Length: 343
Image (tube, rainbow, N blue to C red; front, side, top):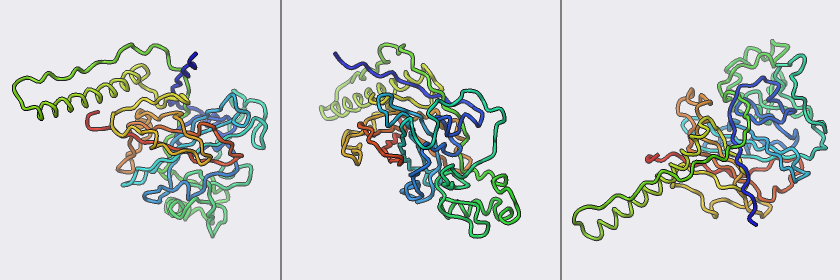
């Protein structure tokens, strides 16, 4: 018997109190600073630099995606970063991290669903492991201010940005530097991602686009060319119509999750072939796990820096064997498909 098709899970962006978005709650979330899973082996500045413009990447989202049949992935999260520096705004990177239920960071028992008696809204930029995080982006911060020796940064870029926006004044005067961290306009707005299972009510049959009738006398070469164009448009229409059909059922969905299923593409152009998706360094192939939908762009307010990031869909592929990493963060593969003029 054929294996059952995994259910598709949809993600929706909702506003949430800060305590729900912290690491100990194992959140799925958009924007803000990363809620790191393991406190060891964080990706460093070189891994989180845009491969094109070399500027630091911004945290886009993370998805909590444990694998129930794997003891070493009882906790498992995927972290997506993107370049938001005009005029580049082109690169995306994704990292996987996982932990067993018994680990050095979190309780064996599930986290409480109740809010804390007194919510602590202070910003902590040092992990319990002692690792310092960048004051601007919340990623690994190996650089430190040479004057106060308290402010940490991932890069010279972010140290300069923080200096201009307030650290110059607070560096030697403020006792509580964390309270003096300004809005650098680098982070995306923060939301919780709530996951729901997609209903099994996909309408049968997609809107069909019939080939145009070719009327009149024409030579065979022109007729063949028009036939080719008509077939191409029909395929494009069918792919985009399928995408729109899935979207129409839940128009606010910002991501679709289904490990091992096929993604839905927004266009017939730039669909990856098997050889386009590199194998994991462990030697295993990578399979589709989730995709980020264009609706997320509505939540990001990304155009306040000028030219903004954009995509038709982002498809994330991960190691089919989910190879064991210890506590390290391992890079996986992300494919960006843009809108075409036809869509």
